[in-house]
Image 1 (tube, rainbow, N blue to C red):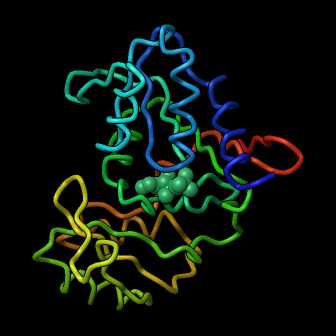
Image 2 (cartoon, rainbow, N blue to C red):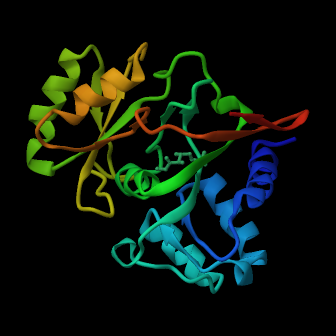
Image 3 (tube, rainbow, N blue to C red):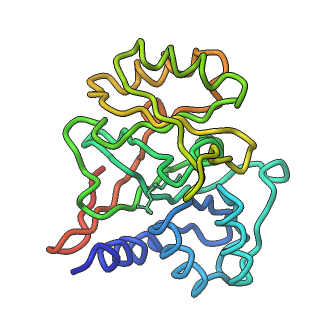
Length: 224
Ligand code: 5RP
């Protein structure tokens, strides 16, 4: 099976976690896109969605699925999203698609987080994937120095094909931190959150996934 077929299989399996009559939080990225396409088939059974990015909102709306502003929503039954890395405890690195801040916000108000990923995303130790950190642009250099002091190599994410910084949906910039071996994801998340100028860090450990559906050649496996 191709990686896309594995992503499609977990996206299909995640439909079992959609709660009828409720609002569903929807993540960002290629796996989340497959999920949106599956959700479209049962859109009449849900009240609507909250999107974690402009791209996700556009795809949901394109399918005729209602998208609510988070400020108009009291609770979200379940949040379904992909990951760049996940460990057996449900801690994740996210933000390869630059949507980490809104993903974290939507996840934080959701009763359950269901991670959907192809099997290659499961790791023993987080950190081989560069850790994304969204920052206020004027703090880019100051935050980078502090991230370097934590042992990583910070690299500013650029807009594809340019030498200009990539800009997020929130007007932030992304620093990708290479070379970290994250032995204690909860502690590192806390530490990076405390750096002034950081909007959000792509470590989802204090609030990790409650369920992880992994696409493998032997079928969809559930880590819980
Ligand atoms: C976006 C994310 C994505 O969930 C993560 O990058 C995985 O993407 P994909 O499903 O395309 O492999 O965190 O900010």
